[in-house]
Amino acid sequence: MVNEGWTRVGLIIDALAESWSTEEELKDLEEFFSKLEQEDRLANLEKTFLNAQITVMKNIDWRANYETKLIDWLTAN
Image (cartoon, rainbow, N blue to C red; front, side, top):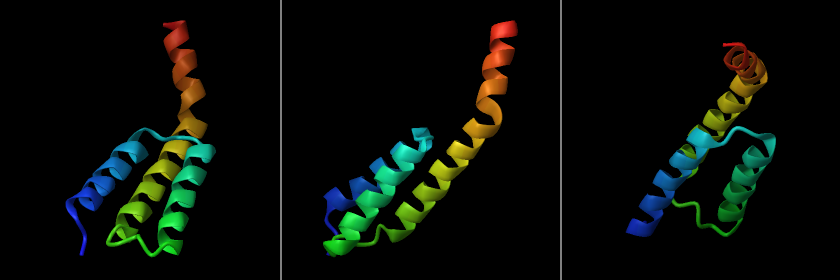
């Protein structure tokens, strides 16, 4: 049975993924997922972790492709 605390964990994971954008943060997320899985405490969060991982990877990709361009543009204007 999933208690209310685990419901909040999913919300927290979603919120973190929105702002995470580095390989280190992606690794932290994957390690946390793995730890919960090994301890059989994953509950119904597998899809949440998968979506969070995709979000972080998209954020990493965005930074790699656009961060420098945006900074340059902001500096020039």
